Structure formats: structure tokens, C-alpha cells
Length: 210
Image 1 (cartoon, helix red, strand yellow):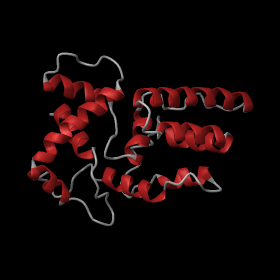
Image 2 (cartoon, helix red, strand yellow; image 1 turned 135 degrees about the horizontal axis):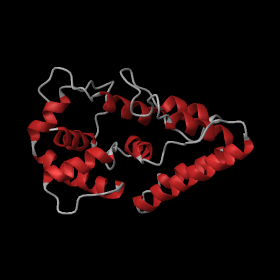
Image 3 (cartoon, rainbow, N blue to C red; image 1 turned 90 degrees about the vertical axis):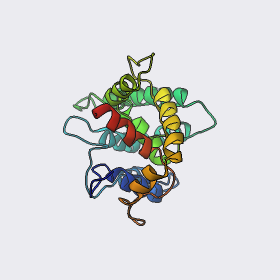
């Protein structure tokens, strides 16, 4: 936090932008979805050369908007357990990819890129930043090892990851210096100012990389 420019502050910008632009009650949900993801520094949260989940989800929005709307309504239903919501969303992506390939037999699309849970966690983190955060299984696994946890995750476990971050957040909130140090990197109009697990995710990543 002592650096002049925090290298991951762009995440706060994307959360802010998503919060301001997400609205399923529009005539063109595909365009809305496309526009809800923005960052002035990096697109790496939702796009790399070999990983393009946002592009595929935009195709799904145009292909079957009613199904995708139901998937997001369920994913964002906080009255249900997150593990089940994530599982159903992934199943929906699998089904949409199969149906899309049937309708477009010449398409070269063979992956919806959501089965590593990174993008699904991002959807949750952008919508409910106080409860969820971006997810990287390797970072989570390494951090748990460094924390000395007895039960090290051997496969994806986003539900446990979110629980761990919430626990970390309670400690970070008690440390006023950590919160105030991060705040110095945030612009009030550009970056998200509300409570967010991004702080705990940032700490978890530093532990993993340390």
C-alpha cells in the first residue's frame, strides 16, 4: 500500500462502472452487458488472449436473452446459497454453448470460459462487492497454505473462498491503517467507495505472492 500507484486499483474502477451501468430492464441487454464492463487501465479481469468469457456471454445474450436473464436473476438471488447459484450458472453456460453450437454448426466456439469460476465470481463481485470478490484458485490455494490452514483446497471452492475473505475483512476493518492507506489510491468519482471485499482479496493475493 506504500506505492504511489496501487497496481490493482483498476478493480475498484470496474466495480464502480458496473454498479452505475448494470440494468437488466433494457431493450438491448447484450449491449448493456457489454457496456457494464469497462476499465481505463486493463481488461485482464474479463479478457486475455486465450480467455474471453465476456465475449462469449455477449454472444449468449444475443442468442437466448431470456435464458441468460434467468441465469443472472438466479445468480444474483441472495436468498439462495451461493454454491448452488454458481453451480446452476455454470450448468446454464454448458447448456447454452451446446445449443449455440447446434444452431451454428460452422462456429469454432468450443468454450464458454466460465468453468474456472473466475468470471462467475467477477459477476458476483461487481454486483455485490461487499460480499464477493474476484477469484483465482491458485492464489487462494497458496494463501491458505501460507495461512497454515489444515484443510488446503485441492479444487475450486468459491463458496469457501468468499467465507475466508469475509473473515479476513473483519480483521482488516479493525485495522484502520490498512483501510486509510488504500483509500489514498481511490478517486471518489472514478473508484468504488463503498465496502468491498476487494481489500481482502488484495491482501489474500499479496500473501499468496509473498
